[in-house]
Amino acid sequence: MLQETLEPADLTLLPPRGASAASPFDDMATIHALYEPRLFRFLLLSVRDRDLALTLTQETFLKAWRTRSSFRGECSVASWITRIALNLLRSHTRTEHFRFWKRAAATAVDADDIAGRLPHNSRSAEELLIARQSLAQVWKCVEQLTSRQRTIFLLRFVEELELSEIAETLSLPLPTVKTHLYRGLDRLRAAHAALNTPKERP
Amino acid sequence: MNSQKAPQLLTTEELDALLFQPTRARLTIAQSDELTSLRSVLTDFRAASVIAAEHHYHRASITPTRSRTTSVFWAFAAAALLVSIASPMAFRHHPAPTPAIATASPQQPIPAISDEVLLADIQADLDASVPSPMLPLTNSTTTKSPTQRTR
Image 1 (cartoon, chains in turn blue, cyan):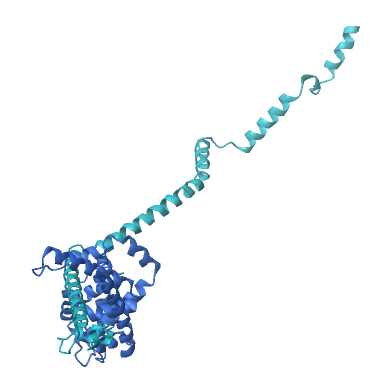
Image 2: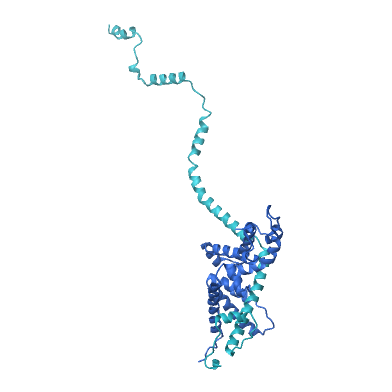
């Protein structure tokens, strides 16, 4: 794990000697400030634990800084950072340690936590209640997706990435991304339809 | 159209495409309802996720060392457990040299005795242990005395 919490100022370091072309990672503080909230959000929704998401976010930037020389500019900075985060996430979630702490963590994020933060948007109390119910159901549905489906779903519907960007980030063919996304969307669609179907009264 | 007989739903691909752009295609009522409903719930999901993530990010930033503190705590707990397991074993091995030190200390003030003195003592002991009737005769006059008495 990362030993210290990184601040953007800590990441402002001089480019390595011999670096001919200016790399976007030379200004790491800007990249950190620009992408950290987004990356944290994606990791929080993926692991559903605040501390773990923060640790993984910091590890992602640390790894990006250490391996910045391998960035060739073949993909966007966002895709490259997200790819690092996904690799860290994958290696972390493989362990039994994570599975145990996922159950026991005090900083875990649950459906109520998300549903409780739904903006009112001048909705009536009843509408808000229904919206929260639907939201909790989406959260539950996302939780039940496979890790790949969930990743693609979150990148699409929370981070609002294009399908081609998701394919680039995950290094997957576009049809594969579509297949995973549509399966996830189908499950959500079915769950949503079941919730909205009026129950017949006897 | 035929939407009144059986509601024709959008394909998932169509649905995904329509969720991200304003609806221009002609949709049936069922399709439009489903699209609106799903779009609404996904928009809510995104909005709530963004707000929750911001909230948790600020809370995590306030207490950034929490996970490290937890790991340090568990490291100390593991070390304490190891010490508690190892200490009885260490105490079990220690008593052996302790009595040796304790017995050695009173022997130190005993003065050194020379070999000659020791041999003299042994000789004296040996001499004392011989009963008086078995003592060697010193001279012949003493042996003749009884005969003189008889005379």
